[in-house]
Image 1: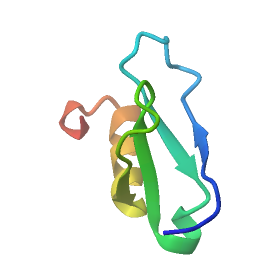
Image 2: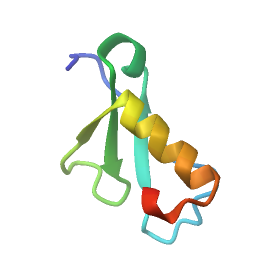
Image 3: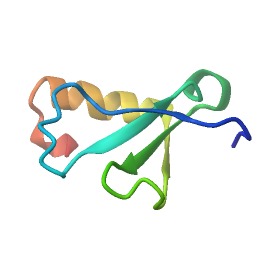
Image 4: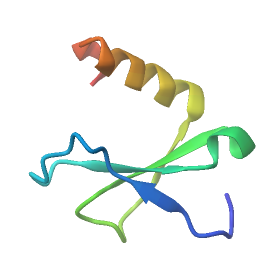
Length: 69
């Protein structure tokens, strides 16, 4: 993937209830992927999602498409 440290982001809509994910930006353009991890287990596994799939997922969430979840 990359040797540079990832810069993680958690949505400002997160209510800190513990069921959040963090997303690392900066690899979608260069590597075509979006790293995602559990915010409460930051040293745990990282999912690397194809950028197009992540974009579709976010678009579905924004319009309330529950099939995206």
